[in-house]
Length: 367
Ligand SMILES: *Cc1c(COP(=O)(O)O)cnc(C)c1O
Image 1 (cartoon, rainbow, N blue to C red):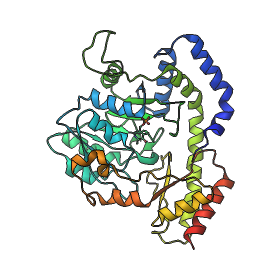
Image 2: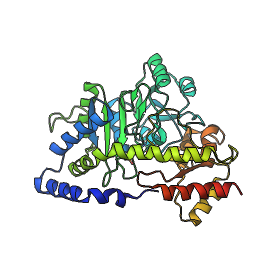
Image 3: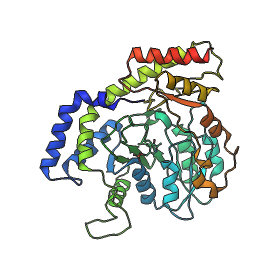
Image 4: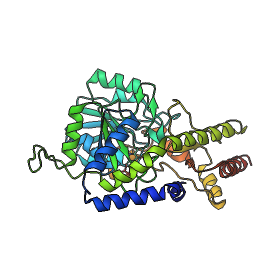
């Protein structure tokens, strides 16, 4: 699905020099590399404030904690996402309220968000899934009407632009991940919280350092949610390449789109993803097919890697059984879980490899 060794090969000297520099510096916790990375990545994203965090999961936790969300509170989110989105809501003691997705973009259905607001709702947590922006105009409309903050899960969407502006700059907080498979991946775990609001930025900084400011004086209970200096330093080496990698992901997506939309196959057999906004960064290219499991098995036999994001929607996960969502309660998410298949889309895929994938997919489904 992703060839990180090939991605790192041309950068290997700069990466190892940078690692050696950090090791010699003796500064491993926060410090100048973290400050520089936060400034550079904020500029890349197009946001005022960026706070380096230990992971994308912890970035969501920090955002929820900084907004004071906890027991008795409800947070409206999507069930069609990586587990962390809803796991973090439950971890701070709040209740995830799942609403269904749009079948065309896989993103949260804003009309259903509006219908799910109660007097216990404290935030809306949409996900810019696979790198495509949610309908932020509509979401901000609902949020403003009800006086609710939005926490954007932008873990898969670094550099994504919505028509209103960059993702991560539109809600109260944006949360990013540098897990190795993300568009900007580190060498281990790390993440980021972004905001346009200096007071919210300060709250996130305090929260990531055990709620202390100054050191050893704790006004709130936080945690150890700091990004490693080593991760920040290595991410600084990779960040200047991200724009180019993103353009190549988009080109790869366009090549799949062109081939699949002219394949002559019925929509139920092969449906390429809808690119609703130009600023899509394609962390994943996810098609739909009624023959998903057979197609995946065939591609595997042909040595073509694929993945299923996500096989079980979160409202049907065992750990959320206590929430009481029955089979059929969120049908668009459940149907997507049965039909989605992610194809390789990474920048270094190459035309020859991609052509073979395209031919194998269309050849199999056309039989
Ligand atoms: C990757 C991811 C996360 C979690 O990020 P980690 O850095 O792995 O903790 C959260 N939400 C979504 C949508 C993700 O894809």
